[in-house]
Image (cartoon, rainbow, N blue to C red; front, side, top):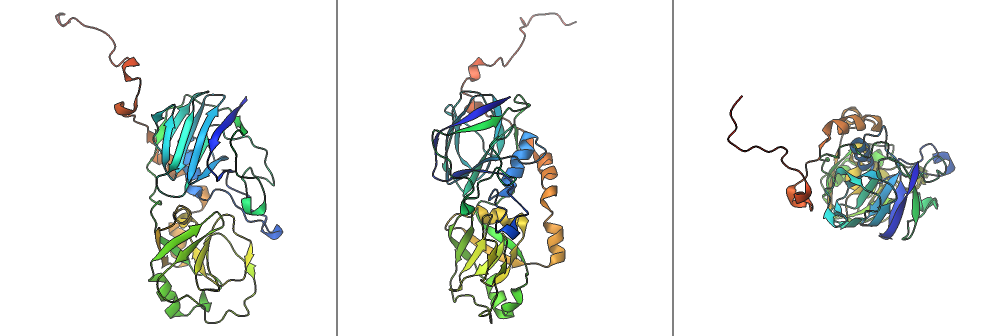
Length: 338
């Protein structure tokens, strides 16, 4: 059984995203997928899914949505003002979205990317092995109002609602960096200055984040004859002006700017959620430490499942509280003990 997700209104930068398209670098296509990949795994844990499924990635603001069938949803990533038929919903939790009800997601309260996921997932036709839009490559597009997306029926719509407390990543922090093949192009003094500097996000999108900093530009000792080669999400490029730009999901596949190092995949969600004005710092670590603190994505889901707890609703958020039977059974008060 399938149904429909109706988009009643929507923000300017909402797209379908999943884990992307690995394995196509030779054809000039970066993997893409969700900018904050941890948010997709959090959604899978809250919905009891074996792996993340295609969802809506909402940059800055969400929209108004309605479904034609009952389904569970989750709200993860950057929190937005969320209401279901006017009643507030908790972020980082799963909820039942009854057919015909209107879900409203307002602007981000912090961070950059919020995610709306569904118990059965979206049934959009895959292209090159994935449902996700890769806007930089011209695959898919930003969603528009009055669009209908096919929705797979939730196998367990009546499952209890769950919540979790996500790892902090919405207000900047320190990103761990491993050296790369071009790290040695930067002098020890230049690298030390980089790791001692506090950077401010000036702008960002799904291709990368540009940083500003006080002081002199960063420059390698010699890179005039540098040949373009493979680049990937997390690489810290130094532009010709000496300004750091850190690559994200939809980065190009080759580049000629020198790279000081690469951010660990486990820390990339912090970068993705860094809105303009956010402060970021960097810390260099070795490969041995990186293997310990940055497990592969295949190991992300299990601990997130263990972190899920039953969602406790506040009486202040239950509009029809008086309609619930809070006490069952009646006594006179003068019965004899038996």
